[in-house]
Length: 138
Ligand code: FES
Image 1 (cartoon, rainbow, N blue to C red):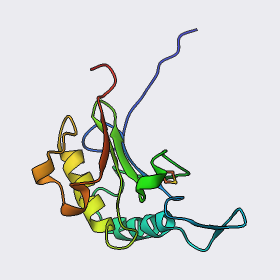
Image 2 (image 1 turned 30 degrees about the vertical axis):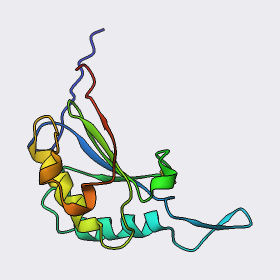
Image 3 (image 1 turned 60 degrees about the vertical axis):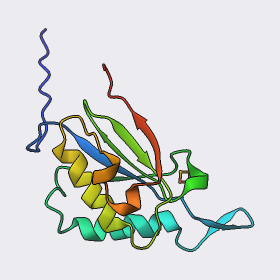
């Protein structure tokens, strides 16, 4: 028997992109339970709202995650795509960072290697870079 893999992506770049958002960042805990909406949930909600009118909304999905182990640098997001650098950004405010995150994600999408030079990044993502990980196979 012969199996044929048909791996395809639906976007114009031909590779899958993901914007990870930690929804646990900037949580308030009491008696071992999280109280109210966390900063990460607030940022996620704002990103999802803004992304409804983002031209890359179908090509660069937002995926919530529980934690990316940068908890003391909240709020935290990451950009990842096949064949590109992976970026982890922290120190994002829960309020007011969403448009900068999507702007930077658009820059990332446009670059074949995902490289995001400091001088080109939106202000909110200039200082809080926590990791820049080479692509697989590089
Ligand atoms: S709680 Fe957000 S990175 Fe850990």
